[in-house]
Image (tube, rainbow, N blue to C red; front, side, top):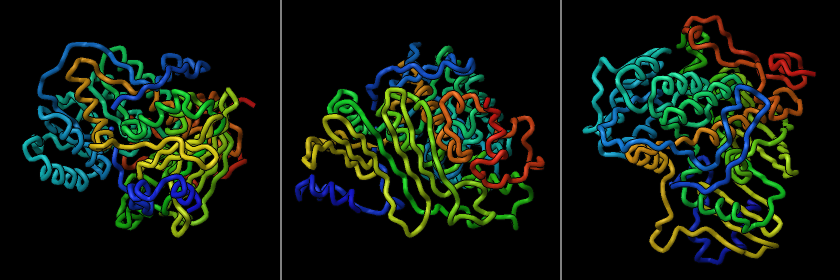
Amino acid sequence: MQERATIHRLLDAPQRAHYVWRNRSNHLFVMNSKEQSNRRDFIKTSSAAAAAGALALPSVTFGKPDSRKLKLGWIGCGGRGSGAINQALNADSNIQLWSIGEAFQDKADAGLERIKKIHPGQVDVDKGRVFVGLDAYKKVIDSGVDVVILTTPPGFRPMHIKAAVDAGKHVFAEKPMATDAPGVRSVMKSIAQAKKQGTSIVDGFVWRWTYAQRDTYKRIHDGDIGDIQAIFSCYNNNARKRYPGFGRHNTKSDVEFMIRRWYYFTWLGGDHIVEQAVHSIDKMMWAKNDEVPAYAIANGGRQVRVEEKFGNIYDHFGVEFAWADGTQGYHFSRQMDDCENGVWDRVFGTKAKYTGESGRKLHVFSEKGELKWRWDPGEKKERQNNGYQTEHDEMYAAIRDGKPLNTGDRMITTTLTAIMARMAAYTGKKVTKEMALNSQEQLVPDADKLTWNLAFPPKPPRKAGTDAAIAPHKWKA
């Protein structure tokens, strides 16, 4: 509320009328084009990471223009997946949905029915190309597709990216890209391979694809607010009480129970700081040209979501990040009902302060309470766009031009940074970027071992400072 009042003071009445103030749980995402960021070297302490440099600007591999009808494989048919496949089919008139893969038959049927109603002329999925099960992704990739849309729970993302890149497919991957360090290292290798072979890897970090955000962060990088001294972000939201229809009463195994309620299990979703608040951490990373912080110190816990059905994730986090140049970052995220919620970004520079709220398209620079600049969509709203759509528009346009996009480096550095914050909260330790990258804690079972009947009971929530939380990382004392 205080932040809102501050912005109201900075804007005159007509300007205030342009912004809609509403609860974040009912926000409207409207965003989209290509960012102008600087190259930064990434982590050199691990041989697994040596091939990956942290690019803020999407890298491009040049090849021949591609005018073929492109066949899409859709893996993960939930809500975000339904949005992504709709946007993919909107992006290019000469593409068709060819096959789908889902862990569950009911979700596969529902997803296919939804997309058929929206794009009846672009869906060519016969019953033989509807694949169900934990290995459905392999069958989709082998079904003759050119592009795969990866929108399953993110714990599966590394194995799916690897399989798709190994098969030479273009990849759209929803955020985040992994839930543990072994997954991060796997994705880094896939990113390097995709660059070498000239196939796309495009991320779903939606704010990177918005004109409003791109315009704003370009100004930050151009020095409009001066040298960055500190960065703040928060992602405080409601309790996210999902999947009311599924529980122990109608699932047959631990694995099915957890996948049906995936958001609440760290191995599948990464915890909400990695799955949801990663958007805010991504904007902190953007301000710092995608440089991974030197370390993170964090706390967190479970106060209101404590029943078994809410798995083992926390409901609040507080994190301090520190970069090598002395810049400090502070991130707070919470999922609790009936609290003061909001999603805000602030960057403090030597010349001005940036205050932003992405969903409302509010981006202003101020100094001592005086407005210095505000983002405007233009007289004809030409700078207002839907970033969910733009990420696909730009991906397919680049494929057609023979210049596939690879945004892999930035997407994996953000994912690693969010995981580093979670590690710091779960263990209670000061976690450096090297510790995070080289952690040996493997949350996700190997693909060849994961079955519905695997003996894999849910782990209890982590307790900071305990050996059970710290030992799996195998960090050197």
